[in-house]
Length: 431
Ligand SMILES: Cc1cc2nc3c(=O)[nH]c(=O)nc-3n(C[C@H](O)[C@H](O)[C@H](O)COP(=O)(O)OP(=O)(O)OC[C@H]3O[C@@H](n4cnc5c(N)ncnc54)[C@H](O)[C@@H]3O)c2cc1C
Image 1 (tube, rainbow, N blue to C red):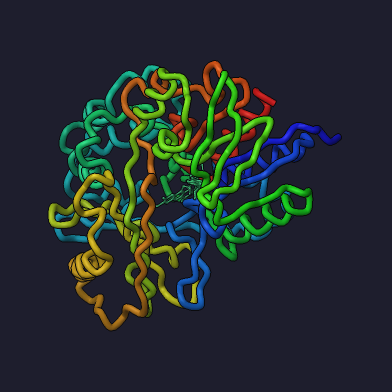
Image 2 (image 1 turned 135 degrees about the horizontal axis):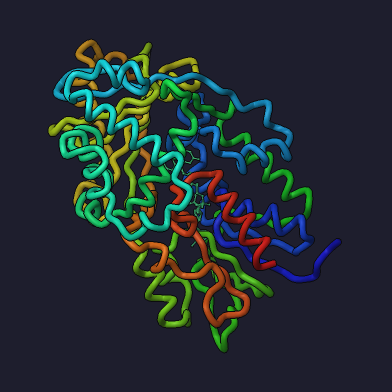
């Protein structure tokens, strides 16, 4: 049944697309406004020579059920490929196998008791039903309490240092627990992990959902960044694009990263505006390498090395076998860090050196191509008591305005499936 109400969705990432998909099922008249020339946001794909691939590494775990449900509805679930993947750990200048019970038992730098605590912590994190008590605790104290200071410093310190920098001290334990749970659920009882990717990249999903929406008369405006949304008399009146076009809608849903909100939305209630402004994010400078041969056998290589300011190397071609080896090397940091605006060449030179330190057999001659992709608001920083600080999805005292982004599904970490799940839940609640 058609519904004569019109809805504007700002942002054409997975969340915006999921809102459009769900509301279209209910018969609303939908228009999407996306700033970029392509859909997908953080999930979007670019042309890396002859290969279409995600700008940022993407994989899926067994708990990504909302995403899988969409793949089924769109008729592309058979393109999801599951693989047993390997992990390794570069520490003190040496590469160790990682990611299985056996590798933990063989790991030389911690004693048996600490190994037992490590397993107990994964078990606890995976099976904890109520995360709310962890919302009040900071992640570092919680990790140290469970694992002991030595294991914290070996397994977690550099990961947090090189993702959050000065913001790491206030991270919520609930957020870390939910990350551990997501990955642990994709492991068997011996801790071996099984992950999946979409054959044809996330573009296959983006194309399928775009086609579905267009066939249902959803209007998709690409290269259409929203400049301003005017809120007046408790109502969001109209939206204006940078090219001057103005549109009016019955309802507006914003899925664009919240750090952009204060510049776009004028007239938000003061308390709501303050809450939105308090949400912090870190950015990412992510290098993607196309190489001859392999770098290692692992999909995920964790790094703990004082000379390297990266949390790891993701050898994507060890999950998704491609014509050439593909490595992603992310540098996460607050965008106020002076490194964030350094030129691409700076990061390439630095990374080439890191790669040679990790694998001395790796040579520049193996590198066929390198690209650097950046995203300013790539990861929300969920601090202690984040649950109470989060604004409501329906903007307080405004009848027709809704705002959400990846921080709104705290304590779950950003992910395609989580963005879809959030959209489904909010549509059920509010429409
Ligand atoms: C390095 C990295 C690795 C990741 N790995 C994984 C993974 O392995 N598995 C997984 O499931 N997820 C992964 N993710 C996360 C996943 O990509 C995100 O959770 C998902 O894309 C979030 O979707 P979203 O629509 O909520 O937000 P976004 O993708 O951020 O979409 C927001 C959209 O708003 C648009 N926008 C911004 N300003 C405006 C404006 N003024 N007007 C109109 N539009 C605007 C943006 O262009 C963007 O398209 C990863 C992300 C990163 C950065």
